[in-house]
Image 1 (cartoon, rainbow, N blue to C red):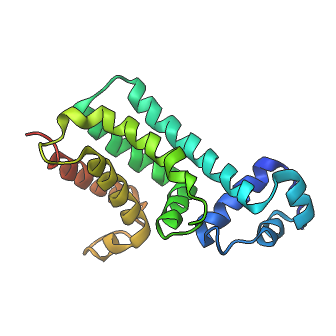
Image 2 (spheres, rainbow, N blue to C red):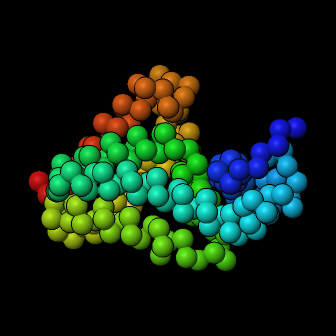
Length: 196
């Protein structure tokens, strides 16, 4: 058994378990076992389960926020910003499986007693994204729903497997050809929500 005792290593393991099983199902003992240590050592290094979850979600937010801030700092707005977000979010969620599984668990009402995640992390990110596209959205279309539609569609694609039902679809949704086909679909879909 490997003894993992750094906070970062424990947080990585906890992120994987919280994403795969959910906060409610994952016990501190399970995290300790996966880390090759005991629960008391884990508590000394990383704190209790709630604190560990807050650390995991904060770190997930920081990584995602950095991606979004890099898009915002480019100064691009409107239609171009939407298309950069399509690529940015798709590439981000392909590269950061834990971020997508952690948010999917939250949307399934996991860790429902920890209510601050959306106010602390999700809402600030959405405000940045919405600010970049508001002027380009068709009248009567809510820019928050535009960003939500983008994120929900990406997470649904990566999590559901329904795209594999298409004739000739590759075995993996992360196959480069499948990703590029889906990327083109996302760009077309988002164009339909923007001003002509």
